[in-house]
Length: 193
Ligand code: SF4
Image (cartoon, rainbow, N blue to C red; front, side, top):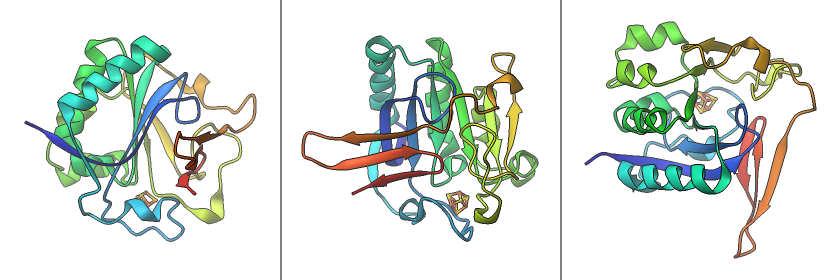
């Protein structure tokens, strides 16, 4: 039974990749980039533990209810949880959804560092956006990317660079839950108030 340690999940968002997507922020990152936009997600400690099987059901439900076109994996650092996320990504592909991955590591590093489960995860990823977030080079012309150094890599035929240019402005989404908690996501953050 595989588990994931999650920081946040948004069932349907248009601010974290092409189309409407389920966005999944994992808890824990070993890097400490100056100006990290999600400092609460860095500690490698249990946050919200969820069985992969449970998240699969949630994603399938989101496909049926919201018509999502894919899932996006962010963090924290998703590659640290590659074994569990690879199962999730494989399932997403099996029901016709695309998979987008944001990582603070360069794609070349992922191959060199031999993160457990990374080969399997990348087999089911359509888009990788790689590189650390750099506050002094904020990206202003490409969708979803925090800083200019970060690059898109297309690992399947499903998407290409036509998705990158910002055409209708940067999307930031605000939500209020039934308990009155306000949250926001979009470039480059996810926050709760
Ligand atoms: S890799 Fe991403 S989550 Fe990790 S410290 Fe850097 S910006 Fe923050």
